[in-house]
Structures are given as structure tokens and as C-alpha cells.
Length: 340
Ligand code: LMR
Image (tube, rainbow, N blue to C red; front, side):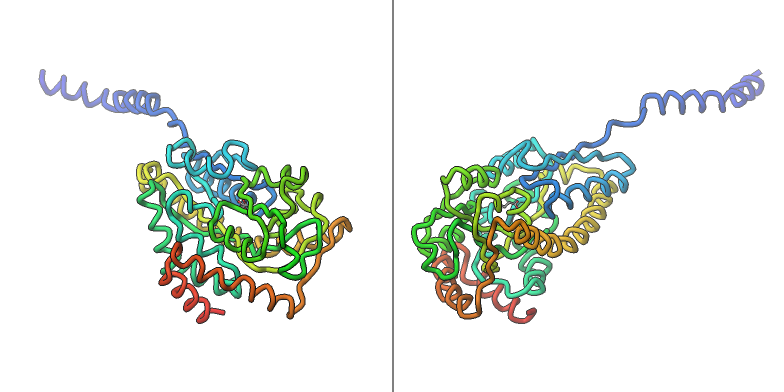
């Protein structure tokens, strides 16, 4: 009897497995995707905006839909300082703030990237960001509840105002919008200007209304925020650099399944290659577009004028070494000298 019962049980096994499987797949019905809210402050068409979108597509492809990335451009969700607070609270999961914006977080060393003329070339910059200095700076974010994943590029900055800016003396008394970096504050004061920290989203209205007289940014940011429409003069000075750190909420990132984290790292690697490839091109195109509007005079400094700007701005390194760290500045200068 027992054998018969056993055989009957065995015969029904496939049905039981089928039911369990059906119930199983029923209860494990496609799980809701993991949501990554990626907030940023630039236009979708700026290098960082394009790269965020590229990351979104790659991340959803590589995780086969187990992750959904929601990109919120143009300060739509949070503007400058707010976005870092939102990330630490876990209200968003991913940002790519300018390296000039980590001071208020307590990681002042990132302001080394704001030092005038600290990077002679992009190759020298990459040797810093992709080497031990860049990695050690990203590690400093861990204690703030953040994980630094990559550096993204924008470019060297130009200056703009409604008067020609050829010599340092031309800045005297100008109210210049800057990012919230003490190095940029010192930079503008070294030129005799009056620095005014404003969120990126406030830059255009402040220029339009005359709250500030001028600003600095790579051309791609100027154009995509229409700043050129309210600035009669742009000077191609390349006096400083603007780049980004791609960062995530550490608790969120550490809590991801290992395979998903590794797929997202792959998506970010590809998006980073893409971003660095378009940044230079987009800035060159943006400057040309600004020039072609005919509404803004685009002026390139002569070698003598460049030398005068350097004389005015290089002392900033000494002025801020107490804040940034002498060793860090010297280490960056050694690295850039070996990788021009
Ligand atoms: C700025 O505030 O000028 C830039 O940091 C904006 C950006 O993210 O490129």
C-alpha cells in the first residue's frame, strides 16, 4: 500500500512543482524596480545633462530593468546646496555636483580644483582625478554618508560681464556670481571684484536683473542657461576649471545587491567615457554659437594679458593653502608638472 501511495505521490510531483512554481512566480511576480533619483542643476543638453541621460539608459539596460533611473535636470527637484542635503537624507540617490560645491559639506579639499591655473591641460587634470589624489579625495566623502564613484568633466572657464574684461583692472568693483567656494571668493577678490555666491539656477535672473554684473563658467553652461543673452562680453581666459564628482548615498549604494551594483558600475564607466568625450566638443561648439549670435563679443586674451591675469591670480594658491592644505596643493602641482 505504501509503495502505491508513494508512486501516486511521485506521479503528482510534476504538478506540485508546477503549482509551487506558478505560485512562486505569482508571489515573486516581477519585483518593483529599484529607483535611482538622479538630480542635477544643469540643462539636459549640457555635458553633465547628456551624461546623466546616457547613464539612465545604460543602467536600465544593464540591470535588465531591475533599476529605474529618474533624471531630474535644471534644479527641478533641488538646487545647489539643497541637493547635497537631499542626497545625505536619501531623498535622492545620485548627484554630480561641481567640485566647487563640497566646501559646505566640510570637504574643503575639493576646492583645490577651483585654484586659478592649477591645471595646465586636460591631461594634467586627468592625471589628478584618475590617480591617487582623486581617489583619496573621493574617500573623504565616506564620512559624510556619501560614496564618490567617478569624476565627470566640463571644462575651462571663461569670464563674462557687460564691459570688456581684458586686464585684471577691468574687474574692479564688478559684482561677480560664483559657486559656493572660498577659493573662487579669493579669486574674484584678487581681481578687485566683489564675489556673490548664488545657486546656478539663480545666475541667469541675477545677471538679467543686474543683481550681479558678471560671472564665470565654461561656455556650455553659459549657453544652456542663456547667460550670453544678458552678457555683452565674454573673455576666453581659461583661468580655472569646472568639473564634477558623481556621488551616491552611501547607505543606498552599500545596500544594493552585489550584481546590481556591479552592473551600475559598468553603466557609469561607459557614461563617464561618453561624458569626457563630449565635454570639450560641446564647450567649443557653445563658444562658437555664442560668438555667432553677434550679441556677445567673444575676446581671447593676448599672451601679455594672460601673463597679467596669472600675476594677479597665482597668489591665490598661497592665500588658501591653510584651507586646502599645502601638501595637497604641492602634490597636485607635482602631478600636473609630470603630466602636461
Ligand atoms: C555652477 O554652479 O556654475 C556649476 O556648478 C553648475 C554645474 O553643475 O555645472
